[in-house]
Length: 367
Image (tube, rainbow, N blue to C red):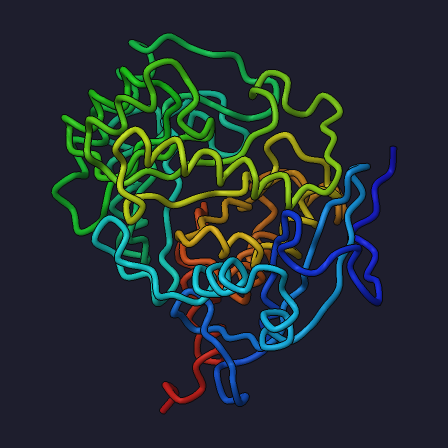
């Protein structure tokens, strides 16, 4: 079934805001010069209006656009409305020691033979360590090391295989001036990686795997939890959503609650909408258009759209290593909506694009 790229806007909602579950997307449109503008996550973007979304009992979505002031005034529960606005606008605390008031770049270092873009390029530890150092020099503040491919249709490997791939580059890079992130779904791997010097756990399965939540909590490390519909083996088998952005929000909200209940402090949590993971091209474009919605979760957002197949499907079928322009377009769209962490293959090029974009978002900082 073909799904629309957006939901239909209406004159009024079926019920007042927050009379039933309600979601807010900040309409991000300036650098704070507009009167009454609120910051997005205390950062470089601002908003005065929101899209207000409700889901009725039949599963249909309804949306209107209004000013923040009018929305709160009309809300059935003004405290709930004000709490979401506060979650959207409040400054984020540092994540893994990194400031969230400007975009941070996470360099992708896959030490796998079969990743969709760079599989086999960094399998040898010396090559992986050299590549990590090059990304740090190019502007990456995080290096994300993964030893298990999660491309569509990927088959799982053993924990020992994964550890044999990731531990040498983790130990080889942990003394560098960057945070090392371990990209894994497995609790046993998280524990060993943390002991080896990893500073972030990045789990595409949202800490749902056996032992993952407990291992992450015991490590005391910051965590990034991603949304994925299905598993890497099955996630592209006809994924379906009523409206993807809201359903991704609900999933990530539930995982934040689970992490906090397990003993992980909110300030140690970031989320990832999972661009390309169990989503069609239309779903991915909905994610991009509605990224701002996720600020209502009150934690930093990571966007990982670099070199994804959606770029080729929207363009001319280019191979993974020829998708730089599309990757930059998505990265810039992300920071225009206040996304704090960009997970990328092409660090130097993304750093340059971000520097120029941020100069426009913060014109007062230009000489």
